[in-house]
Length: 290
Image (cartoon, rainbow, N blue to C red; front, side):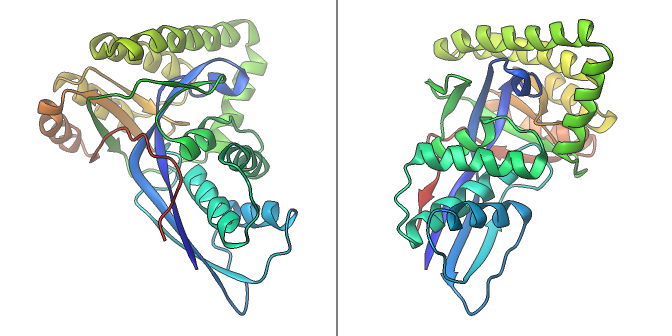
């Protein structure tokens, strides 16, 4: 039996635009999915992502029948990388259990393939960050300085389909390419400026640019009234910045805050109907836990 876990993630900058080759910055967070792999009399597959991971490993080695059990702190359909975390933790556990010999870079690559197969289109962001941990500038996969500030997530409780939202944005781009493509480019420019600010630890200006990024995400049609209420409540309560994280349409928003202000920001999010989650950035990616 092998137990492995992998972290979820937040975006500081770049969701949606990253699908079209623009830069992004994403961070692993201390919310994790744990996967236990053990031999069984019959295979037990819990999700299309787990099934996809099993299929990828079975193309490399002959798999015995396995049971795969999942425990997760990451809300599904929330924009926090739940599918990437379960995919990467499953791949890593199977890799160890069946002595496949894959490197973490190869695990991240296979994970991206699984997400792309299931969703139709996916960036490498979620799976790479879940594998490696830390703060990552994409697509170069450059590791940046960690964030030494608080992170408060607001969950609307409304799940959304990443595939459907990505398809919605793609159709908007097809209809108005001359307008939408430049918006993607500006989002990419925010990520480039954000790289410099993260390295400096300039949370005030990171937050301001997160707010700009949020306005652009709204223009792509991926916002919601529930997310907007939580974002504005967090800002009013003193967050450096707050925006959607992930595909949008529901799911979660994220606020960067001074550690001393976390409780006040969380209370503000909950006062408008959100579920507040306290967390922080982690340097730890996928791990073998037992």
